[in-house]
Length: 122
Image 1: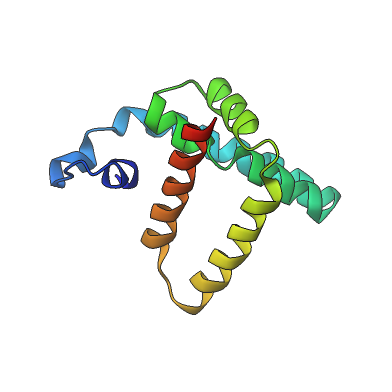
Image 2: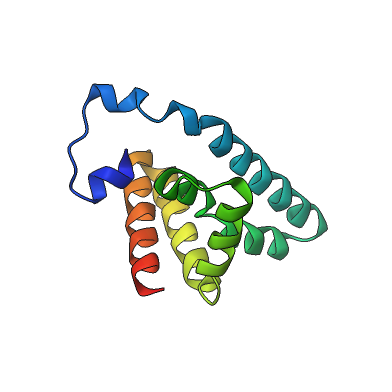
């Protein structure tokens, strides 16, 4: 929904049910990202943050491009090459703001805007 809103497409109530078929893949991408991030955090905090930043757009690739889990993770990994510090800075700022004011929909919109900017530059 955030992706289409960012692309200036109309979104209605029926839209909420249009992409249910993607839910299993989105769930597994989130599960993989959580698993590897957790392993990184257990080993040391920095690898967990690094893995999270590299896989942060995998879910959006599944939704936007209808990719498999493996393809989405690989594309997210390639897209974020060289951008980990910038994305980590964004995560820190958005986490701080989210803790002050719960604005998850806004941070999701910003993340989608970052994704769209990065795929256009790639």
